[in-house]
Amino acid sequence: MPDQIVLLPDNIANQIAAGEVIQRPASAVKELLENAVDAGATEIKLIVVDAGKALLQVIDNGSGMSETDARMCFERHATSKIKKIDDLFHIKTMGFRGEALASIAAVAQVELKTKRAADEAGCLLEIENSVVTRQEPVATPDGTSIAMKNLFFNVPARRNFLKSNAAEMRHIVDEFTRVAMSFPHIMFSLTANGQQVFYLEKGTLKQRIVQLLGNHYNAKMVAVKEETDYMNIYGFAGKPETAKKTRGDQYFFVNNRFIKSAYLNHAVMNAYQEMIGSDSFPMYVLFIEIDPEQVDVNVHPTKQEIKFEDEKIIYAFVQAAVKHALAQFSVTPTLDFELDASIQQLSSVSQPFTSGRREEASASPLYKGFTQKNQAHFIERPAASELKHWKEFYEPIKKEEAFFEYEKTPPPMFGSPQRQNNFHVDEHTELLQVLNSYILYPAENRFLLVNQQAAHERILYQQMIAAVDGAPIATQSSMFPATLEMSPADAVLLNELLPYFKVLGFLIEPFGNNSFVIQGTPADFDSGNEKQIIDFTIEQYKHFNSEIKISNREKLIRSLSRQRAIKTGTRLTEREMKQLLSDLFNCEPFNMAPDGNPTYLEFKQEQIERMFGK
Image (cartoon, rainbow, N blue to C red; front, top):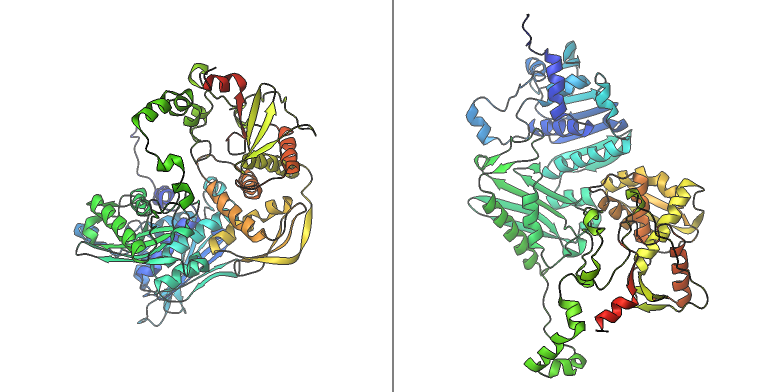
């Protein structure tokens, strides 16, 4: 029998290695931008065509390379950063493993032009499938230009896994933002399909943050700065009012390298405790400077996950630094211990609560109904993540354990049958609004407590689904078109969603430089808050990008229905209540909001009587 084990050819080995490092165009953007930074460049330009699938080029004015170095840089594990094993523990550069250029050359057609200031002529190299096809002298400015064309041209299966241009462009903008944020002293520009997306002049960190994340943060950030012998931390944290429902604007850098760390994010969230809601996320851009010996950056192929020698010290330091910054700028909340005079005069406040009264109160069925376990008010709302624990939520409640029962029919995606609709609204139906948020609907031997916002979300969702599947919603032209200013990343996202918005009645047109004009809105839309609706819809859309993979159309419709729905606390006329319930009972299913929460609770007479001891 012949021997079975052979060494892989270099080009195949490189393609396998590329799978770890170059997963999409944005991966190459990260590696090439970091190489330009390591070369000491003061100006770095990124040019992309077709979201990097056709062309991805980085031009810098850094140190350049000799002819020999230009040839060597495409070899596997070729690096100028590490000479001996000890160097691994003192890494201060962005790249160091020597995999990036070899991986890029294995899956794209590469053209490299480079020149050192001391050399009269530069060097041109063309590489395809890890093989040098051309090498000659060339006239070129000092620095390096590397162009990557036709990504995955020789690995069609990998190319097929790439997303739409808009989706891939969003990833490119993310990687560009992370590198540009780290080095505000370097000029960066990004051009996509001939249009300039970013032009970032050299400046301060605060100026760079505002350029990248949007002008609305300009006056709404507090400076974070703490220094010790062990480590330093500096940067900015957003004031509590800037907190969003998505994690988008959160950046951690260790020795100028962007990292992902749920552990450190938890430290920041703890610093904001009681200042923002548990489902909100603060903005922060924080830089940690620490001795490289205390950090291992070599635990992940993209170097975005690192290990600290002592994580607990870092955690405590980050939390304390952010807390101190918020307190220093009078952002932390103050407590008001004064009671309203009218409340103080109430007998329940002014008279002592004796032991006799306590026993009398605790013996009543009403008290027991609201204090014993497994009662109706103990039914917890589903987790914020979409339908994450839907199975537990839809388990039936045992009759002997619960006073209140309500509909818990799963949404259609789980294939449960819809219960027969016996409810209807006519001119004799008497409705009552409670707490400006709920509607009491009487029925035989029972009543429904309808959540007006959840009900309206279900109605709008069903209307939009029908519009997308059939005739688009009619658009009314805006007499005074509103202009939307977006952050670059959100502008890329909105561009991707424009066709869906159009079907749903919103006519939005790009206006250049990350701005848009709202030329029309749905015919039944109240004008005046178009900008707010679109802004919040985009934010909500990103919020839906969680555990369950659903289509862009579905996410947008869910987001829009949530934003346009009648909000909790809105007073409704009797006519509006009747119309709302009539529309709800015509939906299928009518007992479930788009996010899986119930639109109403059902209270039966026998259950209520049991509560009152009958």
